[in-house]
Image 1: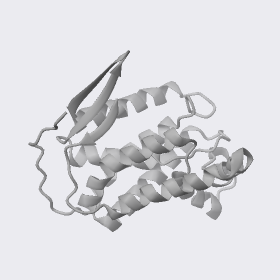
Image 2: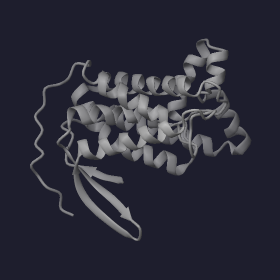
Image 3: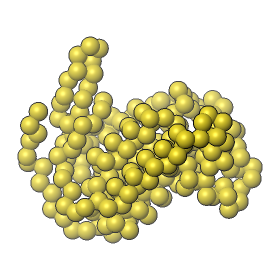
Length: 230
């Protein structure tokens, strides 16, 4: 499933959501300029490496919990993450306020990283990407806007269908996919499959569900009665 847009327009300008997207794009353009050797060194230094995080724990390792959120392994990694953040992040910032949203986003990213470290303690593979923090945004979204609708592209063999589903269905299926795939990695040395840190997604999502209930919210009224023109 691939989300195209939601039925939940933001009632304010999502300044920090846009800023996070821009920063991620600029960092990726910097990555592209480094070449393969420089990129590998950047990931090793500023990605979150579970084994090194535990072995050398200190101020710099704490920093990598944040820097890893702004690194991406390729164009598709970047685009898929930023597109999801663009669709769902504006509404979270709308409800939590600009400062509250930044704190929420970063804490979800930290929780995602720590979950991956715990589940993959011996791994020397750098964990990079915003998907753990974005998973927290998805968790917050499903709590605050379960009845919003998501226009979703579903490829079925050679047929592509575009359907409208409630956010709780779309994000529920997404989370269950992450969870059961994550279970399949248990016992593996790095708890990843296909290079994806599934447990970071799970940890970020759960943190988002919990944290969004604790952060003060703006009082807003949302109307989901409109339909999409497909």
